[in-house]
Image (cartoon, rainbow, N blue to C red; front, top):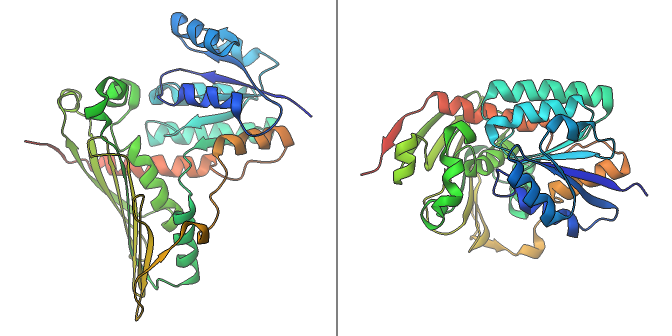
Length: 335
């Protein structure tokens, strides 16, 4: 069986080391961490030593390495377009940490390059954003079956308080030249992904953004945001992202004319249908979670099958949704 040899490009993202380290314990055979790249020679050398693999500070040299099957892009979000497009054109499979890009314009350029590389080289592209857990899949199933009636509102929230608990870790995500945005482009991306997964692409978007901690105020990025999306059939989607709210929170609510579904990490999934009492759906009755995007990507490369989940079209549409909301920006500073 073919051994899939991977490289990580950029140590900027908080999950860069997680992805690389996971390759060592990834639950599929014949997968190897072969190389790392970073434009900072010191960081690249230390990272390569930790992983026991090749070290590159020249990205073109990495892409010319015939042993490398795939590149995991974990550099600054504003650098995604450059590194992804070059990797795709070099015929390398691509796995990217969300968001796909800092702007809709860059996202569309990536989409075009990936589709060209899919045709020319047969590459597999996958974005890391594993939000399709059992509760989200259950919600989509109920929507598709019409059990909740006409969907009026879908609200998804995702956040943590790392801006207070670990401000050094959050600095890159609040530096526009690197992140391209604030809490919404990073943590809020999960919530936008859920809205898109359940309702599709909207026809209009607006957003409200808060700068709460001092560094966010200095850099002019949001650390709390709420986006509203309007759909052609009248449905409304609300996505909220935060790095200043207590704990690690994830919440989903679907409001329809025949029922309401609610999920939160502490309480689980509950459903209340017209004329019925609210019921709690146990975890073991929920649909099985989708496979880890990273494992899925490696399996597609190893088995020579096309990647059909977490694809570049979906990734691009998510950036378009966030970018449109940013364009309507109203920013306020908390007192």
